[in-house]
Length: 252
Image (cartoon, rainbow, N blue to C red):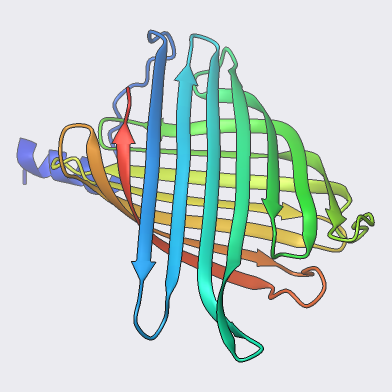
């Protein structure tokens, strides 16, 4: 029994059996997306939350560079000495950079990575890590793409009191993977997961997001972030989650 062209397209879409050839010789591209979400709550709970970020990707003949910076702030009304006062209950700055160098083999790459996190309420003054190793773009076509990277690195941190965080400092193995899917309507799905494994601590971060176009350069995004540390600082929780609804604007 023969397979129709429509059936073949459906099979390709669902199972990626017939990938569109990816051209490593493409022209230079640069994208920049800005994200902003502000939530005001009143009544039983008075709180203000702000989340913003900038994401950029720059691709040349030999390099693919990824940039990300994210800021989260939350202020809530809490009771102190039988009086209600506004206090900062969340404040985090997170940024990372990854550069992939394209090898002669198609979609094979070498990468270098670095990140920095300043979270006022996680028990650390700062946390940072660097890594390098192997990266691969497994596939890329008009509707989806998938890439991963893995390699050794080094992590370091300081507690709020200024002492060195021995449970974090040391050599690590870092692995990450990212998947994108785009529907014909322009809606986008993204799944990202990264893990840094050291002798005494394993730090993981996942982000699941779904965005839908409102206008040509404007989209509404729903995201869910999970962060986990096997050995958190002081009395901090090992697991933290964050759900956000934001507006995304594509500058170019």
